[in-house]
Length: 74
Image (cartoon, helix red, strand yellow):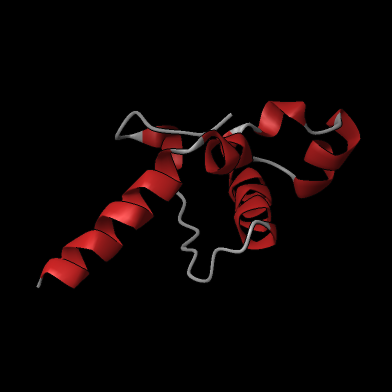
């Protein structure tokens, strides 16, 4: 049980590190590349690409039309 908790702590720390958080900053990508991915769903795909390239093994891409829950990445 303690080992499981330690693993979860390590994962949470990793996700909060600047190295991982930089993947969510799509505005730093060249405009031409962002445009090639298209609209909202495409931008989610670009984010998934960032996460995949950083070594994430499980990524879910979903589309929330009109961002009803108030969340989005830019």
